[in-house]
Image 1 (cartoon, one colour):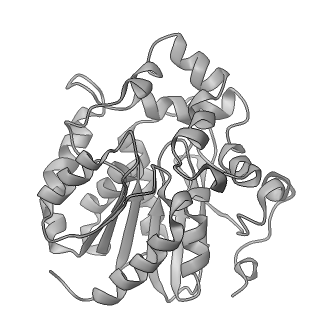
Image 2 (cartoon, one colour):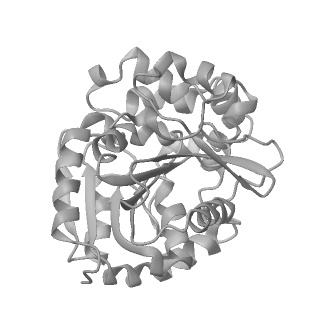
Length: 313
């Protein structure tokens, strides 16, 4: 299937934006208005296919899922969102950029597309966002795939993350110098040869100015490290919901060389879900889909086959 055969025509602006990495991201993004802003998303594959909903984290965007989309779009409907402030979505200066708002937007997309029997794939901040949506729309969720994320309290933020929250230094480093996104293209991969110039351009393209890096900083600031934080209660609600996910087939696919979401975080998921299928990839880092997308695709195909729609654990 030609991935450009479906979807709306590209605007001139979007075409120019994608051109430097078009061979990596050969999709025609769509848009949905949420709260007065445009949310961009990719929707590839047959409309009657089983839905794979892919939810990215920080500082990435739907580009993170491109290899999974290209591999699976022949038989599955692949949807990958760009959160507000990320990718091709609007980047307003006056939006709250809180966990609850991102959940609202994802829920709006799922309901607008009327997605059902969804296989939810989450990474990084996509974990609490995607699982927060699943809490509200549980009957739409058929399977869950967890990759290098957390959706519960008690995971210590590394000092490199905490430094980016420091007043003064944080905005200068994250928004002024784009240090968070730039360093991720080095520190989040184990196989640096895979972070080619074109791939690196794809990751960094949405964050090319102080104004467009607002979500990169706000995500870091929104990590709820204490009960006084505005997103603490939202994450607590998600954590309280997690036991219900035992009613759905779950897969845990983990890049073991992740210095942020370390193997200890994977073990926390396994303690919560002892029946989950686990694929720990020793040579992969945080950007799992860069280091080992071929292995993830092979595993995912088997997972989907072993847990057909309608099966319940």
